[in-house]
Length: 151
Length: 223
Image 1 (cartoon, rainbow over the protein chains, first blue to last red):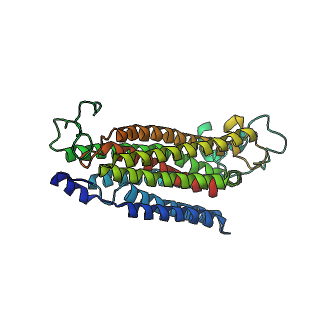
Image 2: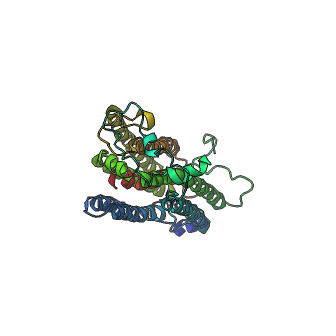
Image 3: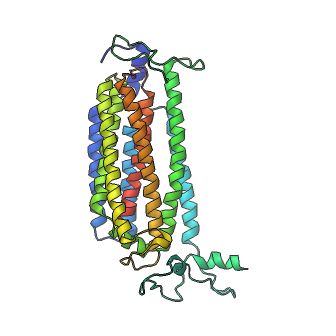
């Protein structure tokens, strides 16, 4: 718009993302939103749905961070901060989920199984027909962790 | 930074930048420090929301049927509309940053106000959705009385739903307040090519709010 100090102008040119690129990025993000919706309507397995949704969301996040948040042209230190926070997020997710999905009932234990956790999640005063949890259903979250607690 | 009254208007049509704190060599140095501080804060925000997303994945693993049933009872149309609203508000915030950086304070003001309006629209749509859930009894924990979710774990889904969208909505309110504050400062023509860090940082916060929603939308509404 007007003149600035040469120093500021140089700092400027360094991280410039013009309006046209911002609008283009917005169009791509809207397109990807409809793509997420489209994928959710396809007749594929729930696991594939989750994978597709997370992949497209990750692409959208990368676009927002690089273009809207100027990390593409930004200082390297800020990139390290953000990438590190995401790495710790992934570590947390990975190890907790690795624990959760590999738990199993201690079938050779003499300790009787815990009451169903599923039942506990159903509030009392539920209308009849609501608590349709099959009795003796195993594989819930309770048994392995719960039995240890009972000892 | 607070008192703009004492600062003189430059010939270009914006206020002089605030006095440089003595421990910075240059104003660029100062702005880079402000930006770095904001990114550190956003890193802690990522970890705050990490707990919520972790809860989502753990409970989804335990109660897959009720999570799928509950997702079908959320309005995809309203969820998608909210996603597009937030994406568009992120665009206007990014454009406001661009304008403030070029000293076009009035343009930046109107773009920021557009973002704040879209934030309000987002909260309005959220309020419509919440009202519907309250009427259906699709509520967390012991308040759950929604007869259409028959699989176990319905109350747990709504714990995740209300806490994730609730914490996100709180961030939308904070973001709208920040954007309004920098919009007022734009109106007073405080920003220039050498000083625009407040617009940039409020914008970064708003983009983070958008990022969280980008993940919440498919996880809650679609899969």
